[in-house]
Amino acid sequence: MRRFVRPLAAALVLLASLSVSGCAATVSLQPAASANDPACADVSVRLPATVGGEARRWTDAQATGAWGDPAAVILTCGLAPPGPSTLPCQTVGGVDWLIDDADAPKYRFTTFGRSPAVEVYLDYDVVGGADTLSELSSAVSTLPTDGSVCTARPTS
Image 1 (cartoon, one colour):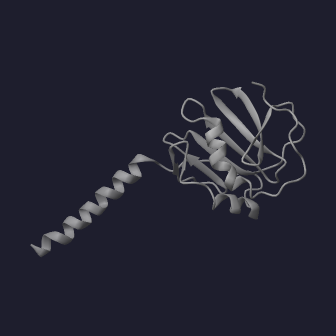
Image 2 (cartoon, one colour):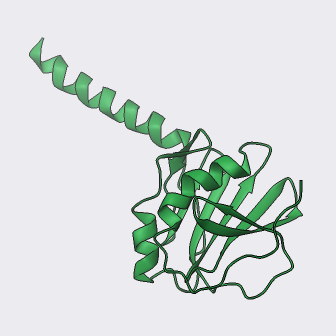
Image 3 (tube, helix red, strand yellow):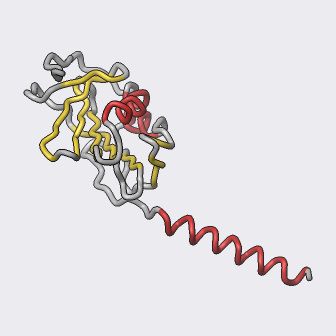
């Protein structure tokens, strides 16, 4: 009996690892130019396990995060801070976010007044913007501010 237990246990571990790895492959992303900024490391270690009910996935690029399968939320830290913009801006959790809906229902949110900047790309068909930004703002709020503040706010 004992000689069957070890092979059976090994087979179960192999089966479990294959089933887990088959569910959500690593998300392939490109790091931003300043992904190696220590401030991005501070953001990365604070990213939540879930966003908008979507589980976090492994990524292959520094200072990035992804949630959902397929990825419905993608975060990239290390971008150049945006300058003045005509895009609407919203403050969530103490972080100002520029809102770009040019690819709706996929939206791009970029921090304003933070250096380096963070970009969050999300699919509104899967997750909501307010909830997603609320869950990410705690980590992103650790980025240094540069004194810039949003003035254009979305209208209802």
